[in-house]
Length: 390
Image 1 (cartoon, rainbow, N blue to C red):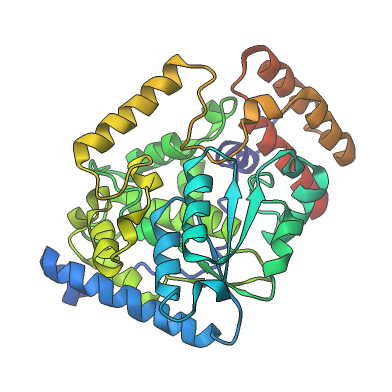
Image 2: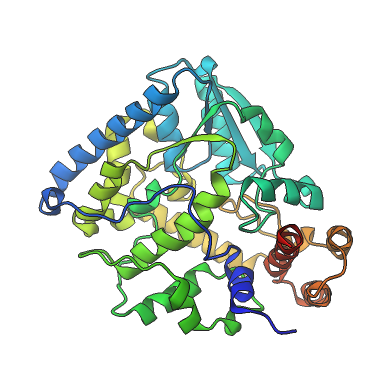
């Protein structure tokens, strides 16, 4: 079967590069920030974080407030800032995932500590259904993988509330920082493919020239091509699209000034998220009270050598123990859950189409060797999307 490059890119990346972004990301710089030193940058970052939050809260204070809580940096920072305005009992929180993962366990512990109105949203087989995928598709304009989501019925309770989201702001502050920089668009595109491909089966089919034609490539002095390409494409068209549901109210920290600041300062300040982490530790005395996913389940204040040992031990266990439950992964074990019967159930609702034989082939390959579950989920998503867009 002949696939278009648009389909191939979806099957590799899990979203359409032709998507529009639900938020406007700024790619501007200001000379005022270009030459400030680290101490001044740290002070300014904290001020911008607080002022951006205050403006968002002022616009939504009449609404109930919700913070999705994970094991990362952004969600706990948003909750701690919101606690300056409201008591924990008056704040709604939820955590999505699987027990034993850092996101799920840490998120639940934080919510319990602050006494919020908390809900645990399980990541279980209920999300592997055509009905849930189709409902989620409506929330994201059928633009991306439809199975990496909570059960939609669980989300509806938050529809009329204001949901706080740290979406993408962490990337402006170095979450995907590249210490080595590409010297050409071609090199940057190859890095983009390597870092963003979810597929085992379709990677070799990507036409890099066709990819470059659809990539948005902001060019800013001092910023690596990898960084701006990641922001303008994966973060804007997949991450934000996947998390900021249509018809729901979200408050993000993506204010014009804080984005401009992050792109204007010395980019070495973002290495290993140094500035971002230190800013949060300065702003919130209790920030290190809980372990963090960013530091592999240790507190952010843990010495670098301890974090390195923890990271290496997890890496070794991933390789040596086939049954190792990776605490860094907050989803189902797709290889085990994408069984032939589950896929057939979803496929039967979709009906026979040009991707049916390919789906069956991938199921057989996954059953024999493993490693093709994400290929299967992307193909099923594309089939549902094609049905709805037809």
